[in-house]
Picture 1 (cartoon, rainbow, N blue to C red):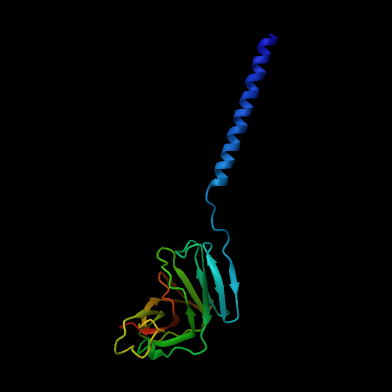
Picture 2: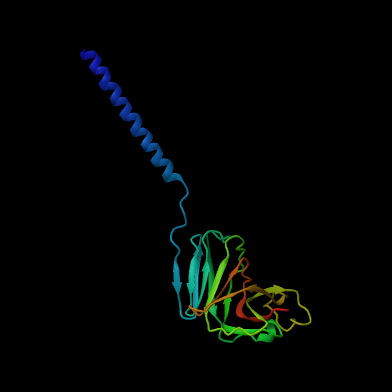
Length: 198
């Protein structure tokens, strides 16, 4: 009887060791799994924010305008980016002959591929939409110099200012205009109105 009892205690002890080993292995496996990027940081500045942005993304708030960079963008481990308000506003005719400007002229120096994880831009503004017009965000990009834009050179690149238009929306209750971008251009951003017929 005693011998049988000894065997029972030995079996229980071996089972406990196996269970503890299994739990330890599971804990180690979880520890080795890649962790998420963590909470999204938020940066504030008076008219300008410059920060090293990583895989956690960021909210850049310059007072009256925000730019949200979602997590896991294609920017590598970290990249220093600047979002700012421009003192000298872009002339509407530089963008489009019938463009009506809304809010401040902004500048974001990151030319980012945000396909699948769009970057959002928002400004505080009161909007009275003109009949026959639509809300857009004009995004400046580097383009081939032609007759209409050859006066607007982009540094020493040999390229000139070109603009594309993304749909924007107005939230009347919040008095904000916002747009989502899957490509950020790397230069100026300007909300405005454009004729629906182009």
